[in-house]
Image (cartoon, rainbow, N blue to C red; front, side, top):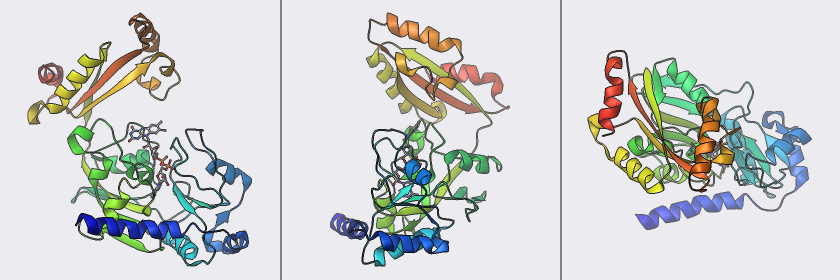
Length: 336
Ligand SMILES: Cc1cc2nc3c(=O)[nH]c(=O)nc-3n(C[C@H](O)[C@H](O)[C@H](O)COP(=O)(O)OP(=O)(O)OC[C@H]3O[C@@H](n4cnc5c(N)ncnc54)[C@H](O)[C@@H]3O)c2cc1C
């Protein structure tokens, strides 16, 4: 079974590598003339796709492609695959990688999250508790759509301005992972454009090698154009607490205890992180602190034996109006 899986992965890998031969720019230009492929050679677009959130790497593509549908993506990849002068293709979600993962030098960047007027329908099934979304959709928009039905995905990243395809290519981890697994464990089905330009639907039962290769596949095994994501009822209210530690061992011991709790004592979210003085202000997490907190925390960090760091546990418990009166007692009882 393991050998079969390895051979299948190797075959898919080969397909993608085969795409990266030498480039004939005139062929690319001819593709750009084809209106349905909508390639952009604009310097502004090229510049944007040459960098990412990390700002550490730079790689200039020759063109940008903004698909309006999965068939657009398949068509571009197919043309590239069948072309005698191939070039590299890379999917880019929201460009929040830190080491150039979504870039491609002298190739085409497929901007999955920047399509305008595309056919990117989001479909929620209340009965089967899933949502079907475009691979370039941002998680914040997935949440907005599912909340209209009182539902929400089970597993998250902390920051929601990331694309579905971008986080599913990694893992997608946050404070729910101890309970539901990372985001890649909460996907029922995918539509994927393979290195040959085929558009395939895959799941545990259908093209399962492709499904397992693409989830956490770092964008190397195909391009996710649709994901079917598991939902649960969205919490009505959340009690949220943060606990600061100066001692690392005490912090990890408590975190391990909290994630080991079973059923009725279980929290809904447990996450730990390190707070360093310089990172506290003007950080995307700063908005979670009240304005006086960073100043206070900075002074505690300085007093903490010059270590320059504190550790923070973040814990939540969902509740609703029926048990609102007892939520504080539940928080104290559960964490004992
Ligand atoms: C401020 C910030 C907070 C973050 N918080 C978390 C967090 O809490 N938890 C967590 O797990 N991660 C977190 N990350 C990391 C983040 O999940 C990854 O960097 C993720 O890849 C970014 O998604 P993106 O849409 O920007 O992807 P991009 O950077 O655009 O792409 C990332 C990779 O995915 C590939 N890819 C993109 N779209 C597709 C697609 N449709 N099909 C196939 N491959 C594709 C690209 O080719 C590339 O290899 C955070 C990053 C930042 C910058």
